[in-house]
Image 1 (cartoon, rainbow, N blue to C red):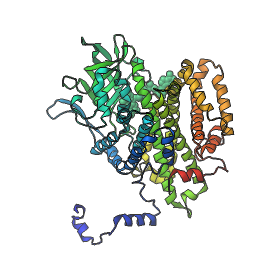
Image 2 (cartoon, helix red, strand yellow; image 1 turned 60 degrees about the vertical axis):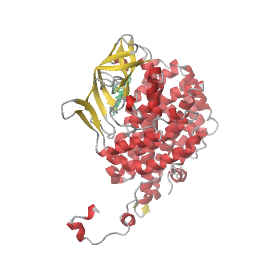
Image 3 (tube, rainbow, N blue to C red; image 1 turned 90 degrees about the vertical axis):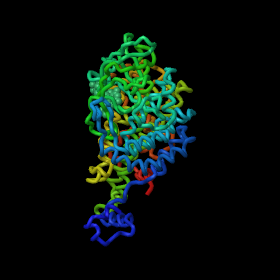
Image 4 (cartoon, protein in one colour; image 1 turned 135 degrees about the vertical axis):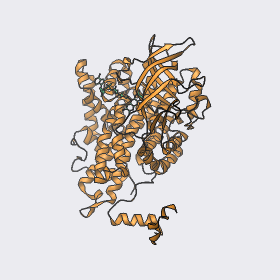
Amino acid sequence: MSGWSSPDREENLYVPVNADMEAAMNAEAWNQPPEFAPRDLWQDDVALREALPREGGGGWEAAVARYGALAGGRLYALGFDANRDRPRLRTHDRFGERIDRVEFHPHYHALMEAAIGHGVAGLSWREPAPGVHVARAALSYLHHQAEAGTSCPLTMTHAAVPVLAREPRLQAWVDGIRACAYDPDDVPAARKRGLTVGMGMTERQGGSDVRSNRTRALPLQAEGEYLLQGHKWFFSAPMSDGFLVLAQAPGGLGCFLLPRWRPDGIRNAFRLVRLKDKLGDWANASSEVEFDDAWALRIGDEGRGVATILEMVMLTRLDCMLGAAAQMRMAVAHALHHARHRHAFGRALVGQPLMRNVLADLVLESEAALGLALRVARAVDAAPRDAGEAAFARIATAIGKYWICRRAPSVVNEAQECLGGAGYIEESILPRLYRQAPLNSIWEGSGNVQCLDVLRALSREPASGRALRVELQAAAGCDNDYDASLAALVAVLDAANDPAAREFTARGLVERLGLQLQAAVLLRAGNPLAGLFCRSRLAGDHGLALGTLPADAGTDAAIGRALPE
Ligand SMILES: Cc1cc2nc3c(=O)[nH]c(=O)nc-3n(C[C@H](O)[C@H](O)[C@H](O)COP(=O)(O)OP(=O)(O)OC[C@H]3O[C@@H](n4cnc5c(N)ncnc54)[C@H](O)[C@@H]3O)c2cc1C
């Protein structure tokens, strides 16, 4: 009632009987679409509903479906304030004591609580069974659609477990993630119901080249314990309970767990210098940090730091793919929703032939991105049991991270334009998606680094190349465009290029591998869009921009299945 207490309002005797109904009538009168949300992100997404059981995650379908409804309802709504009111750094308390604390909008905490409680960061470790990584990937995909900033601490927490599990003294940390409980209190890990973990690799002088790290790790007398001196230039989710960091030990670069509080209950000696003023990713805090004799525990051997932390990076790269696919999905769903309800020149936008070309092309991108991301999730899931899948996961993670993340900004931008001016306005969520879209390509190894990693896998790990060929070959014989493109691609892989030429052309190769893999996933799934994908993406019947499908491309299948009327 408080909204009606001002004198102006009291004079206004008209009180609508049903405000929602009135808003809907007004929207129609002004040629505006109805609200996009709340909507059920699981029920609406036929590609996801098909992919989850196909890739082995069907056992968790009820849990994923529940989260889809939550993500498209309450979580979608919470995301707006969590991003509008950006996190604030408080270095000191009012008495001048250092506290190095970041304050978030309460909706950030509500998002984290919902995600962690539903297993976005811990399901794989709480319910280890074949297929669980696929189910967790689906949860992550749904969460990311609702709010992407929280996805950073969620993915790092999930991905830290295989590294933490290498050190028996850190079992409590593994248990703290498996607990699937969010506890934002800034107290020692031993007193918490659940734990979150961040990661510190990038320094001022080098991020891609982590071997250039200068932070030093000075051994203490107690086995495995060190003091860290130095800094990290990017240090996201700085309120995490612990961080996996790289630092130079006497025997070479090592991987360490740096807890927020030392085991003796004293606040650890790292200082948050400032928060990055970022293009997007506003709900999430990313800081610069200095270590001043900060206590840390080594994981793995000195000199093996990169190899140790790579287990984490493999999982975070998968989440970059899922995040990029999620951004595309949310943007494309908005474009379809708008085009169905907005009219121009006497017809709904969705009925305009050129708009149908754009929409169908967007759907192809979105479905191909999700399909490949979940296929890689299955490989990651099966890797401990199946050497072929492990070899495939090794190379497909780099290919998918490069290609899917590369596509996200163009797809989001094109979907944004489908909304016209409304797509440039914050309330539509499209600007937030647009700001977020480049990030998955940059962090966890930028585009070029991924392409060089694919070359490395092909030349030094022959099992990866073999697994890749097996995967591509399995889809042969279903589509002529696919077969012709595969033959040409295999010839390129077989050609003995000199290494410098190979490096110079690595992007071209990885793009082709990414497209061929996406086509293989769609064909093997019997996806009705597979033929059009092969023709437009592999046989070249397509322009440089989206919305350039050939004249006889049917658009009904794509537009019809992407979002229910
Ligand atoms: C919002 C945000 C949050 C982040 N959070 C974290 C975090 O929590 N923890 C963390 O450790 N890092 C974090 N990062 C850092 C991120 O991982 C790095 O920025 C990224 O790895 C690139 O490193 P760099 O910035 O030093 O760029 P550089 O290494 O200087 O690379 C610049 C460019 O050169 C390219 N390049 C590098 N080597 C080659 C080569 N040999 N051939 C061709 N091209 C090459 C790269 O692909 C890139 O495009 C974050 C970054 C951002 C933007």
